[in-house]
Image (cartoon, rainbow, N blue to C red):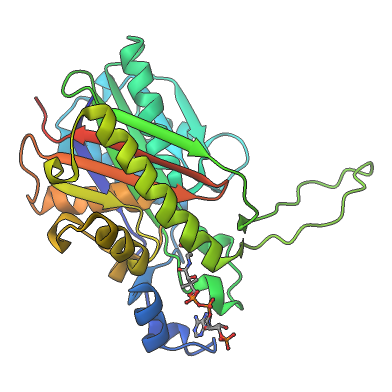
Length: 317
Ligand code: COA
C-alpha cells in the first residue's frame, strides 16, 4: 500500500486560549503547559460534511488522480450531520464517483482502522485506489462549560488516497477495556424505551487516558517495527495522534529519540480526533518535508480504549 495524495480542511474560525478564558475559568498558561495547545479551529458557519468534501477534493487534486479511478470511499467520523445516510455518501455525491462508500467509528484511532481496511480491500483486489477521509467535530460533543475537556479539542478533516503497490505496510490494532472515555447518545421518542437519559457530553478520566496512551502507543509502535524487522533508528518520522504535547514528549523520551522525528501541529489544531494524523501528514506533504522512501510510523489511541499503529514507506512508487 502507498499513499499517493493528501488533503485537508479546517474551519475558518480560530479560537485561542484567551478566547476560551473569556467564558471559562481557564487561562493560556495552564492550557499551554499542560497540553501544548495555543489555538484550535472550531466549526461555526460551516458543516462537517462541507469540510470533509473540501478535504477530499484537495486530496484528489494533490494525488492527480481521475475521480473515476477511486474504487472505494472510507469515511471516519465519530459524529456527523446525519445518522443516515452515512457521511461518505454525501462525499460520493459531491465529488461525483460511482464507487461504494462506508463510514467507520474507531474513535481517535479511526485513521489507522481506515488504513487497515483500505489495505485489506487492496490486497483482496477489490480496490486499487481508496479515498480515506477522517472528518471530526468534537466541538459538538464536549461540554463547553467543562474546562477539563473542551479546551483540548478542535475540528478538522484530513484525507489520503491509498493505492496498490509500494511497501508491504505493517498495521497493528488493539482494543482494551476501560471506562476512561465515554460519550452517551439519546435517540428518538420510543414510548417503549425505559432507559434513563444519558449525559450527551464527553466524560474523560484525563490521567487514566494519559497513562493508557503512553503505554499503548509504545507497544503498538514496537509491534509494527518488529513485524517490519526495523528499529526506532530506521524510522524517519513518528506521526503520533495529536492529543497532548506532553504525551508526545513522553513517548519520544521513552524511545530516546530526537525531537525532529516527532513532528507536531497540536499547537494550532488541538486534538482533532481521527483527523489529527492525516492533517499533520498533509501539512508535511505540502511543505515538502517528506522524501521518497521515508519510513513513517502513525500511532493513535482513543475511546474504547482503541489504539493502533501503521508503518508505511512514503512515495508514489
Ligand atoms: N484550566 C485551568 N485549570 C484546569 C483546567 C483548565 N482548562 N482543566 C483542569 N484544571 C485544573 C483541575 O480542576 C485541577 O485543579 P485542582 O488541582 O484544584 O483540583 C488541576 O487543574 C489539575 O487537573 P488534572 O486533571 O490533575 O491535570 P493533569 O495534569 O492531569 O492534566 C489533562 C489534565 C486533561 C491535560 C491530562 O490529564 C491529559 O492530557 N490527559 C489525556 C487526555 C487526552 O488525551 N484525551 C483524548 C484522548 S483521544
